[in-house]
Image 1 (cartoon, rainbow, N blue to C red):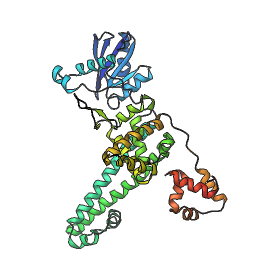
Image 2: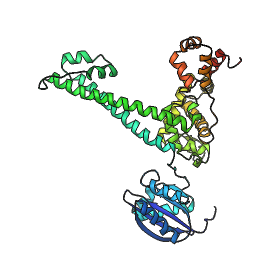
Image 3: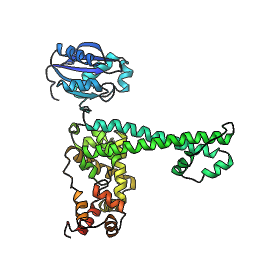
Image 4: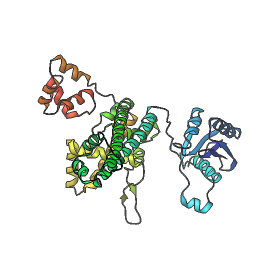
Length: 403
């Protein structure tokens, strides 16, 4: 075990209004405990108080992504090393009790003994914008789904004629129809139901417009943040935003691809005992990132020949579908880690459109030659939905590559 560097080590239990800080020396002895306001002036006072006890080697902060976000940014801007500290486990709390002072001391000792090593997300770049916009997008999407369900339920219990008119329609058509209702006498149940449906339908339309705007903003930001990740097969706006948020603005904090796989819950966990040697599924980590890896796997199993060939080979070896998916998620976690930490230059696809227009060819003609839709060809030219095989065929057809 490496000997702690002489100096002081801090720990902070963060809250919405007050942060409780503790300082220990390199031997683990408590030097002092104090409370400070959760404000810019409080952050400055906290750091000055710590430095009065000696040189601050490392500070462990609970909740670096929530209540401790402001303090973390301040400490990092002052050149202080910060580590993210998990709350004490339940066994420790049952044994020692729970108080802010106890939590602050535990955070300081975790920073001292190396139990806490995770560097916090910096939260000062484009990924932070992606994170907050994704919060708005998810909220908008969930609210729109709830309204669509309410509109459907109103149809089920509507008067017979109204139910007959709307029951067979899908959600977009039902919304379009209900938004045009002109209810008359609201004392009649039919007219009252129309008024309720119109209100819900117009809310649905407004939320749809907001959702399209947010998706467009995330499309632009994710492409700017990491073009190589967006260029990967199976990675769209939603998946890219989730993985970028999981890594943060400072992906270099991820020490290895194994650490990233563990962060995404895609790493096997040792579960051996005695003569039994086995691993179990990791059910921890960032579950949204885990779901993003699963979505990439599903896309590639559908349209990527190499992935499908791998799945067939593993199935012939006796692996189940679930085991194959777990293996693929671990492999893709390795690939995504490399794209996050060392993105490679992305091919410029604007030449596809220039070459097509220079030859006087239309999108429809290109689509017919490639046996696809004109919209899909346009997406390929704009780099919205890259596809390696389709792009290769397109380049051959335009004469940009030789078979």
